[in-house]
Image (cartoon, rainbow, N blue to C red; front, side, top):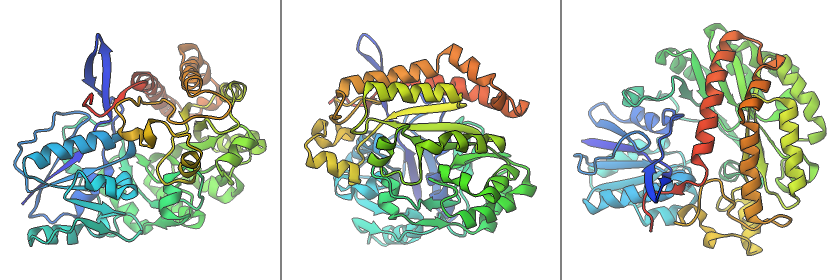
Length: 446
């Protein structure tokens, strides 16, 4: 038996004169979720990976089963790929966050849809396929990531991913922000792996530079402390994502530093109380940001600040205030993201009820939608102005002069080795940010 696993691309870039080329993601990292499924697959089943970001998919490659991971920004392309395989009478399984959120939509392009954490029922799915009893829908219970197994990383060989290993300690988040699909799916709960399983996986993969893909690695603070204590003797360097309320726990901050953390993606989201209220971001208080930033930097942790722009009180003036704040704080990185209405979230429901969604609501499937464009009608600013200003914010923050200024700031010069790594990453991030602007989702024009 042979399985082809696929990581779809996002879409196409228009180079000039109407000529399109697939997006070449120079910042691509290993598709961990597919490595996990490969690790769960019995050894007598051959698994190969096609990464649509780096190679041409061979639709005539012999295979019994096609498994495609679907995220919202890759949904259009994922469906294109699935349709091509089904034209060749291949059995297609779709899973992932978007397929779990929109199973009926995904079912139009698949023989089987998995809702939830696929690894919990993957062996059952394979057994059912072998006995010709594959069901059109499987619903998996929520739980810790891939208990008892590690990712099969050999499927990544030759793909030229960034030299960082992806791992996952926990799933979910204790908070339920109005815009977030994670909070929606996990219902404000956090599920953590056994610490010894994480340590075993780290030791088995060999690299010393790791990225924990958890939505909020400190979502369960006591479990996080156990993990960080166990990481200390490994002498690794790692980055991850964490909510800013970590600064309220001095012991936690000490352990994060001792465990080898060099940087964290922190969701500031808004610089105003009105914005935080609109996003239901209860764990944040903008009046505390200055002190919280000092605490993080005291522990020699670089900050990748994430901002979500376009709430109902957003204006050109508040957007400028956000940019000024980021420039003043000289964050190592900053992402200025337009609010995207993810299906079934509270934000999506509100915009839908007020008839403010564009592209007939399903922007992720629209041939007219472009990457980093507003997909709804804001209240105090036009969608065109929001799109334009947000891109200008990216341009200004990632200008050559601003990069040099912040990378020479004292708090970004804490360790020469880390500084060299961040110096390379910041230029890569700059190129990829500008390149993706206005990209069409999917490969087909129609």
